[in-house]
Length: 200
Figure 1 (spheres, rainbow, N blue to C red):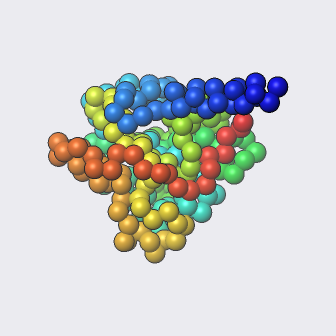
Figure 2 (cartoon, one colour; figure 1 turned 30 degrees about the vertical axis):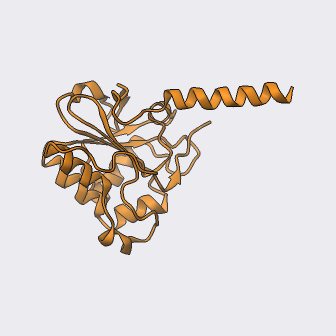
């Protein structure tokens, strides 16, 4: 019995690993409803760089980047250069970070955020598709639809705003390198933050 349970556990891990999105492979396509009720499809943005940012308003690590204005500056900088920025909320109802679309729209306006869209994922299907672990957890998809970055926003895994100035921002570095035709130096890093509050 114990061996059977162990085998099932190993198989489950193998399945999860097999489904996990990997740098250098095609990013899984998806359709997700945004906070304005519009369907957003990754395939609609083929030919553009796309950033996926997992978000949770109540997470101290997310607050680090929003209360400092850092995430908003990144959004403004890169969307001005044609990058599509999709913020994703995978918190389940009743968990930290869950918000209604109208609450999220109010928050976006209040903090001056400028993502292309905020994707509402209360069932966690998009989060599980990409294997998002933390808030924030960042992904970059290139114009061909290939995943070129998966990991942390920067190299200081703390909730301290004072760390931002001395941090290496992996997202900006990766976008800058890729747009210059260079390979991404740090294409996969360990994400940090609060665990994504999935329903299961």
